[in-house]
Image (cartoon, rainbow, N blue to C red; front, side, top):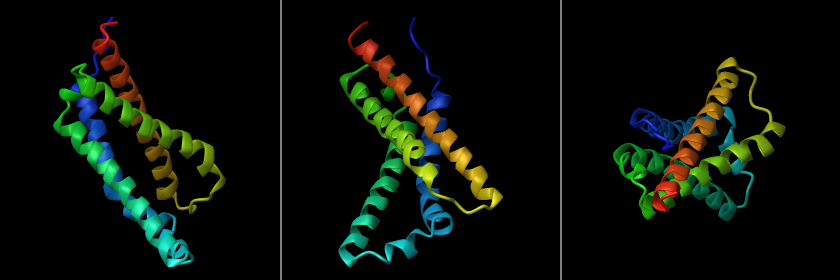
Length: 146
């Protein structure tokens, strides 16, 4: 039985990834007061933390853009499709694991919008992970004609 993942679901996932990239600065600033914490670090460590924050934001945006622009290519069972869907699946699965393993020990502000946002963001991360795990498995099966 061949797994068929509808394009609209993949594109919706890509839009969600771009959304996470665009909302990321707001979350850092308004929810976590990240910049105040960063100021407590030595200057080099401040720049390293900011750079990694930009990497995360850039990857989220890039993965979303790739997903939207190359939806069919992400399903074509080529070696590149296997590699790219595997990479994106690993990225989001790692994010989900990190989110639930480490982040619960931290408090977010008690405002309703932040609590609802936390749940919705977690749901999005899980959906991204599931979509790309499914794409990876589908591509892997197709690539090796299993």
